[in-house]
Image 1 (cartoon, helix red, strand yellow):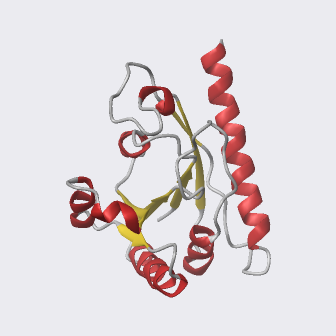
Image 2 (image 1 turned 30 degrees about the vertical axis):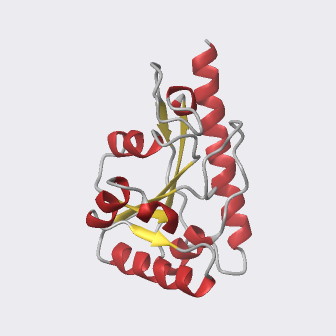
Image 3 (image 1 turned 180 degrees about the horizontal axis):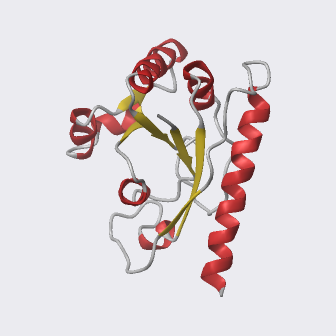
Length: 174
């Protein structure tokens, strides 16, 4: 199993990730999405892991469930920024999913998405036409990192996501 992480542009990112990945995945999502009609129920029934970001104890419990899923062989997907971008910039990454990767001893696969924000802009549920592209990077082994060096892991993964995103931008412009 692996943990896949990607920048977060739009609600279109989730179906794009499902289509791009060559494996079954479980998602880590913010608890607030659990109450969205249809969407939340579908995610809950699919076994997604909801994290209460406002309650650290509950967040840790949720991430431990994620660890159990990974150890059972399930791949996990997360948006380490924690929320969608409003302006297209890739925000700093939150550390929870990286702690999960270190605890489970699984590689992290960086990914980048481009075009989703134009297809379904922030705050809209009215999609536009357009192309969404996803690029999947090479796995980053977590065995050479520890809890003490987790910031280095976060930085290494974020740098790869930024690089993949730039590659997508370059291909859009040419």
